[in-house]
Amino acid sequence: TLPAFGGTIIGKNEGEWGGEVSFREPDGSAYTVISDNSHGVFEMHYGVIALTGLAHLGTNRGTVHLLSRPHGSRVSATPLMQLPGSPCDVVRVDNRVTMRIHSGYKKLDNGIMASVYSCYALVSGKELVKYQCPLPEPEICFG
Image 1 (tube, one colour):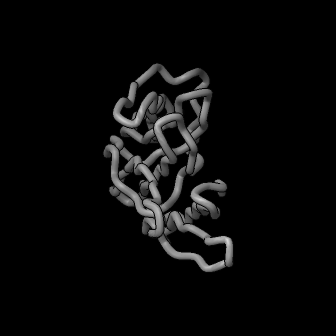
Image 2 (spheres, one colour; image 1 turned 120 degrees about the vertical axis):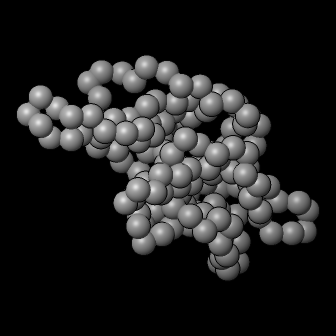
């Protein structure tokens, strides 16, 4: 959750069953802003953003949205950029948001296929930078 726009932004991630980014008004009423799994909502220097997406059964999509609330209206979302896949292990570090994104598979020495992830940092509302993931890399990703 994130207090913003005079109410509360709420992110929910239920994996393959869906999720949402919603907004709860001070009177308790709520509505959906984005119908997709939430992977984080952050207040950045360029605005309030929501990261959404899904990685499941061949689907791997993600989006960064800018949330806004013009005077007298509801909170709305504008897509800022498509991500190369669904973000996971999302963390805000100062003025950037870091994440891992599933980028394929590799065969281990024992013959088992393991997921491969790429690391990215969202450094502005328009710039996503790929960087070397720190070692050791976890074998799973947390939404």
